[in-house]
Image (cartoon, rainbow over all chains, first blue to last red; front, side):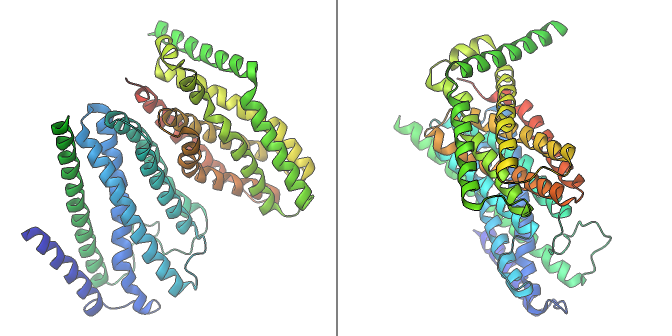
Length: 217
Length: 224
């Protein structure tokens, strides 16, 4: 309970700092603040899909259904954070580029990513039997994550993109005010904690459901 | 151990030959894919005529026709085994990897035949000849390898689910979208005389990554 309150306070403090303490970037103006949601959400998306892939591989190696709970929950939540990153990016694009959506390479690749993980969930829903579902979904999750480096790192660099360079970009140090960076990092820490908290709920739920099913049988 | 390797290579070859033979007996998959491709091409040609100067539309149309014509039949290689109740028998004689590799080889061959008919027809009816045949064929080849690799793995997974047919397109298309994007961009670039090195590298790397992941994952395809 105390951690939930702490997490709430942490993210609220980050938002307040973003609006009251950190400066805005000259050209971007008030839209600078989209960054505090967009950037952590995009990073947590990658983290979540990576987490899902690691636990899928672990499931295939060890056949422990807890890993499947982790994989499914992380993919679910990754999709959620991906939607947050997409919507916040789209709002920013409307303000800066004049349109919510214009198939910029980065918009294209995030859209592909959404479809791939939505397909993962559709696939899970169509398989009977929990061990078979876990095994087949794990195979698909590993294949799906193969596409992630291409979509996130390769495609936007091959084609011309209007999207600002990501922080681990190709050209030297980012020229951003340290206060903005601090708030972004703060929000990233908050979003990451939020992800792991929600994931732990999903994993516990999976365990309880399995126990209840076993009790009925 | 050389003995095991040669015997599993033999198994892959046997599966490939079996696939070709059973396809040749009915020609169900090939006929429907070719019919689909020809019908689509005819309707495109009928509606828009020859549009050799619109390279962006040409490239997109070519790949949409190819991918959709191929998709319905690529899943068929595994679904056929499940529906004919022959999967268990097949697994008794070969390892999952050998079965999947044999079917991957068949799918590649299948795509080759499909393209050998569809692409010339497309170039004659709708588009003009490619500016650089080598680049055109390189994009076509790498795109096909990536397509076959993704379709084989997803097909094997989908064959074990409920509602196989409907799900296959929904699950494999998202994985194929990067292939489609790279191939369309490369084909268009080739027609415009633009450099397409980036697209070729993207397609090649994607195909290699899919194949590499498949080789690791094939072993887990069947269990019970």
